[in-house]
Image 1 (cartoon, rainbow, N blue to C red):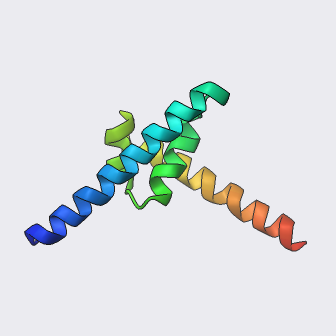
Image 2 (tube, rainbow, N blue to C red):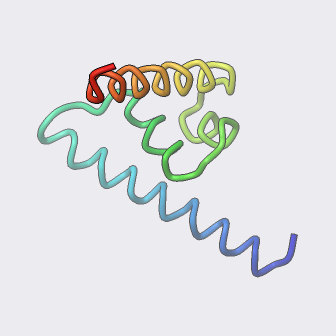
Length: 84
């Protein structure tokens, strides 16, 4: 991996962590953000299972199960909205 590519990936990950921290800070004033919402935010930001697990101090297998659940719920919602 080239240094430029490494820096770009590092910057992307740091920006996602900052965004998550901002969400967390705002969430405490309105409502507590669930672990599943944190996982979804990080996954949607492009982080993989291992990276999310490290950030949230969870096992990658736990993160994989949560992401699978999130995907299933999204599919059900899409089908319901499309009238299927």
